[in-house]
Length: 155
Image (cartoon, rainbow, N blue to C red; front, side):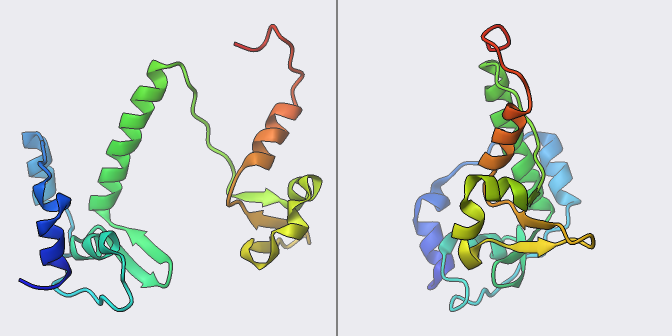
């Protein structure tokens, strides 16, 4: 064989073993997995991207726009569970943060003006500016700063 699939099979990916339970096999038999025989290697140059498209893990809707299909979603959930178990074992806590961040937080840090065109900015119907948060330093700082912290409240 030639092309990207042969390259992948000859590399470390072809030598990986998969350990799964009987339940995993039954679940995968009923799962929606749209395999694609051909992947455009001109627009999809990265091998891992080509493999995920071929395996039916993701669907590309446009440049940089992808949907995770059931197989990829399942893999992500398993990875999250593994990381959560390890984080729990060391006493760490998990939290979810907002994706849209008010501009005032970014303006306080001075990054609103310096971010340039790379930062996705929008205005809501009330005229309040927000951005799609690429990082959450401002949000974490705001959360911690809004509480009085003493040496007794820290671990």
